[in-house]
Length: 275
Image (tube, rainbow, N blue to C red; front, side, top):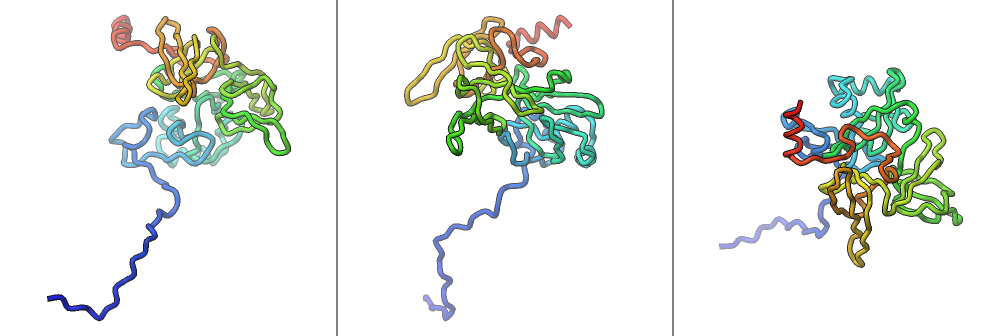
């Protein structure tokens, strides 16, 4: 038997409950594989702060100091180093331990007179590549967008969040520009065309370096670029994955060990046997 209760039924609201703000944690197993964190080294990983590079295309500052350069043993030691204003990224002191550094960023430690460039190795993993003080004065940036800003001022938006006004009229989207870090001015630019030397920043060929042989435009789909590396291997990828770093076989920045040349498993095995 059904006995109607005297208590009034709560009203059903159609509004779904929304999450309260952004996520502030990152599980270690969910962290990008190119950070190369061990599985059993804890439950959590440092979550990158909002910044110039995407969360999954960056390397937080604490991983550079603790895991790569070994200047700190713990997370707390990283904080102590950064609070002393010892570390600069692109010429600016950064004290946020989760600050996201990305491709082509220059990390400088004046106290030890060391300079590093964040760049991909041949397997698509971030490496902290040691460079000279002269090379640390500039960086290469990819032009993501060219547009007219307020009051019709021409400007370019670069891959690291910079906006530079009044660029050279010959600069177009997907080209690379050399930016002087101290003055934030464009000193040189490289066109994205056949014969340009590119490093791939996404896809399964990330980290490989080669010369553009041709570009294919597909209406309604992705533009494809064909690349040939130094050993003669050809591969294709989306045009958006290519980052111009020079012309011919002359890169404008020094490359890490391997020079962006990916070897097969057999070639790697033979190289190990030679050692």
